[in-house]
Structure formats: structure tokens, C-alpha cells
Image (cartoon, rainbow, N blue to C red; front, side):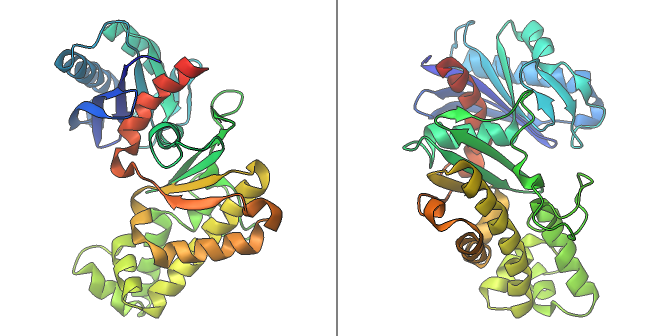
Length: 318
């Protein structure tokens, strides 16, 4: 394993580049606006410039690779991003090849949730285990599966879409087009949908008050729930039960030692996580669930950028 790796966390609003050492320590980090509306070429040029800035700041050798964590779906084998809703116009973009030409470096492209899973595995909550599930609760739900120290991502690297596992065949429609996905119950967009429905129907008064004049969303729901508001607690009970049922499926399939919960939505805390635990106890097989601990991410908001560098470290380990 090289002593350092370069990493890029590509988001719809911001892109970050960093130098990370083999202990997971951030040696340098830079951030700039993605400005996705300016087009694919412009964004790729900004990524290359951010890589150059980070490499120059830490005098990183030219042979040190770059890990790029990007929203999918994408193919890490070919370095092609098929499509991402947060980056308009990004269809079948050969990001790996284009960045390699611009930077002269080997590029390791990976799904952002899988990268975060690797970050937690090498440098965060999962550093002492070999079998781990990572769940990132954000606008949507991403995830990653580590089995015997290896990332499980399928034939073309498209696997690990844990948020799109069906937990109800009669459930709400998901943004992916399917029905009853975990994400359709327990994500920022789905909790916002349910909270706004409550408020518009004349209920959810405490949620509306917690929003303090801002649009109603998960932050207000969490605040109201922590004050004991029954509407908010019921909403999070439904969301947490769906998430817990999905996690129970992952426990039954993969027999992990650890379930790591990250992402901004996880900051709601116990009003969301307690229903998750109850659902796991209900739906996971007893002999298997006793092996799995549910813990919070230790990398927090840094999981993306540290995870992007972990893509490089993981490739070097294989």
C-alpha cells in the first residue's frame, strides 16, 4: 500500500479533492463548486485542476493514483459514468479515461456509497472487522457490502444498491421507478414527502413549528420527535421500521459483524434508530443477528472524501 493516495469526491453541488495517508489522515483538502450547469467538459477540467492543486500542495509523486467517488450508476471497471441526476448531461461519460489523460495518473472510479463503505472499513467504524454493511442515509439511500475484506459490487460494479431493496410490494413509488424500496420510506426526500403531507392536511403542527418558517423537512421532523411530538414519532417509526426490515434482509444474506449507519439523515438519532433496532430484532434470524452490531459512522461528513482515497488503497490490496 502506498503511503498516500489522492481522492476526489464528486457531488452535484461541490467537488472536493484531497491527499489522504494510509492511516486515513487528511493531509490536504480543497473544495470548489461543481457548477454542473456549465457542462461535462467544464466539470472534468475543474476536477483535474483540483487534483493538481492537491498533488502540488503535498508534492505527491506522479505515480500515485487518484480515487474518484461519484454518484452512479457507473462502471468502475471501465471508468464510465452511465447517468447521474445531479449532473445534467452526464450520460455515458468516460470520466476515468478523460481524467487519466488530463492528469497523467491512474484513475480508480467508484460509486460514492461504495467508496464511503470502504472508507469506514479501512479507517472508520469497520476497521477491526472483515464483514460489514454500510448504509448512507441522505437525499437517497446508498450502501456498500464488505465481505471477507472485499467490496461486493457485482459483475459490472453496479451492485450494492441497498436503498432499492423492496420491503413492501404495496408500498410507495420510488424515484428509481420501483415500488416499496427502503428509500421510498427512509430517505430525506421520502421523509420530506410524508412530513409535508402531514402539515398540508392540518396535522404535524409541531413539525411545522420546528421548521421555523423554512421548508418542512427531516431536520424539523427530528427536532419535533426529540420533543416527543407523536406525529413526528409515528413518521419516524414507519421510516425506521422499513429501514430495519431492509437491514434484517442484509443480515440474513451476508451475516455481517457490523452495520454502519452514516449520512446526514442519521443525525436524527434515536427517534429513527430505535425503530430500526426493533425491526432488526423482528425480521432478522436470531442466530444470525447476534453477530451484527449497529453503529454510527465515525468518519461522518468526511466519509466521501476519505472513501475516495480508500478506493485506491483497496485496489492496491486486491
